[in-house]
Image 1: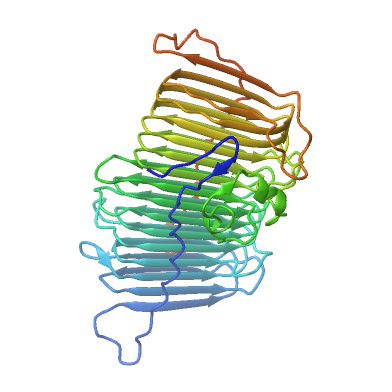
Image 2: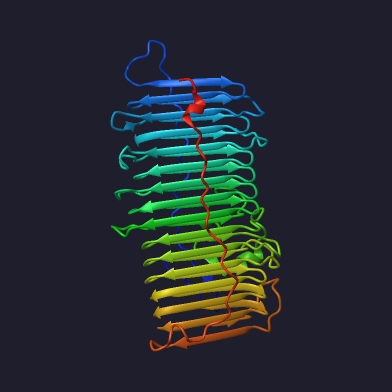
Length: 487
């Protein structure tokens, strides 16, 4: 179990050692043969120039390769491309690549079997392209035999949509979108256990949305890196508890360069209270104002991290983590690199089960930290800097701990514990350089023994309703008949 340690005096957060793996995919290409051909493997390449072209490729067998290039330079585009690769029972080692330029293009790659690779590029560095749709499906014929597949979708421009569906074990998916108003959806399901999946979403721009769902009996990894304002990320992870299943989820919004390993920066070895490191540093990137991040994990040994780096006084980032199971860790940091006058962030954590830990760090004004833990051996930590901040920590179960630290003035802390107890609320401790003078703080603590009534015992200081997390970014398909109506 990884530990998050906070002493009210030193305000030290030790980081959860998040295993950042995702990114690989790319691949596809292959093609080759022709002169003399034969040798067993099917292979093919289609090149179309201009607008409103259509191509449909179907290959059966193993080690097939298909590449489609639809290029009108810039402009309307409106091309359609469809590749299906399978075999008598399942396909294997197949490669499907699509490259489409311009706007309003649609592509769909379907691969059956193991060790397949699919790569789709739309817009291709043209920031003026828009309205492209890409869909990759990798699976087995009978909901199994869909292992070790990789899928990557790259889209440039705005109003683009990407969907990746992968079934069975050990699949990798990467979606990279540059521009505004783009949507990404990755669904990965493990049917029989075995190795888990990796999902990586990178979005640079404004008002982008990312949705990742991972289900199975093994370790899944999900990473969402978003740069710009008004971005939204939702991650669902479920494991059924067989073996040593544990999921890792990370969302970071506004951290400068996409791909930055946050745990290798100020989070490596310990975050000094969202405190001195914050006050000493400046902005690490463009920020993530008005970002929204949700993480839902069901199972045991899961790690969830959300980092939102806003800097505006009304940045209003929202982060929510819900975990059900045992041995889970939840960690939220908001406005870490921003000015101490940035604010209006809201962190919401819910944990149900045994041996869970939760930590929140917020820098700025008018933040809210809302923590709920149900189960035994709980520990909730939070630290807030400057003024007008609220923390509401509720623990039901055994061996609760708590810790809450607030620097500055007009801060309020509510701690309600039922069961094991122990709390430590510190307000206006040694102020960090540049922070506001302290005073007018309020602390309200209620501790109840086993006989306390869950329904009637005091609890107050409720925060505004949670935002609606429901998101399902479906990329509509297009009919095969549209590609070849007279075939």
